[in-house]
Image (tube, rainbow, N blue to C red; front, top):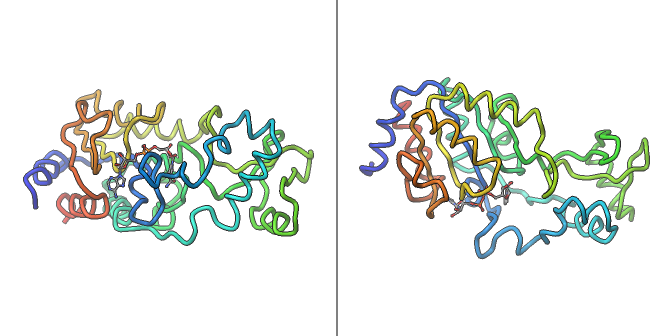
Length: 251
Ligand code: NAD
């Protein structure tokens, strides 16, 4: 075990309410590109397709967005060892909650229960009407899309349908924000994993915990915007370092 890892484990040894904050980097080892890398997500999708104004105003944007949503936005991606390590922390009773910026559903796929997850940027699984909010079954909408309905409309009010991912220009889901804030208030330590910690308001969550003097560990393979606020940044891969850290404090 490296000296840095030993130091981080020492800081977390007595922590009973650890908040884990995750970003796109926890899922790159599952084959999902992150936001800013050279093969980052915007090389595959157009950022415009995730801007609320253009999505609502332009049919062509919606048509493109649905074409990137179906058949499966993230292919057959499976959780990796870092996702399982978060679940392990929860099983051992040391996790107050996992606040994620990710929309890929891999924490749930790794066995972490929904009530332990706050998805600040929504989830790619759901579809709802932008006008009346009515949820729609993604399998039904996919079937309609396959049959040629390339800009599907709400069954109830005829409004624009939209994935439950939070688009640029859209409010964060209040329930997830409240959950994240409550956990941040209760946490006695925070581990941020695979995030550049540059997207706000999400990055206020680990900052809030750290501002009370609690240990703040970052696991990331490149510098982040909050390295200076952290107790330590463990430089390397999430799928290797997070399981080692969790083992060291719970084993
Ligand atoms: P980001 O792309 O800004 O930062 C990811 C960070 O993770 C980078 O600093 C990168 O160096 C690091 N990283 C990449 N792979 C790593 C690994 N295996 N181990 C350790 N570090 C690794 O991501 P962000 O901070 O989450 O912000 C991006 C925004 O884009 C978020 O709002 C998120 O909603 C969205 N997004 C989500 C997904 C997803 O759901 N998987 C994918 C792309 C983008």
